[in-house]
Length: 104
View 1: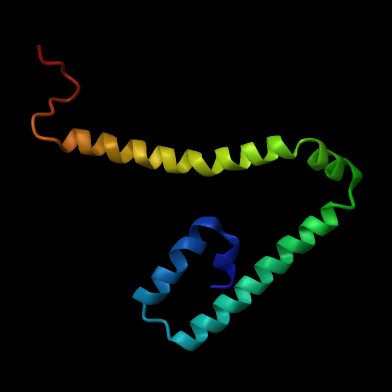
View 2: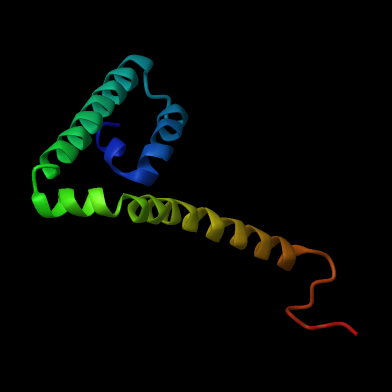
């Protein structure tokens, strides 16, 4: 649970896996809280420390708009890809689908 906080996909799936495997509540709560505290403080410290590096600080201050647009783009791409895959599978499984042939 602690390490899962630092891995994006694992952070989402770990609570489900803990529930399915019937992990006791007390250890789950302790490890989850510990992971949350470590994750929060490590990212806060990394931001603070990188703020002292002039090259990084100046880049962030100058290009914060670009950074935000890039972060949103990176977050949206996997979701858009998943939606595209689901629609493609639904189309393939639809009655009357003939493998890309066009009917006239």
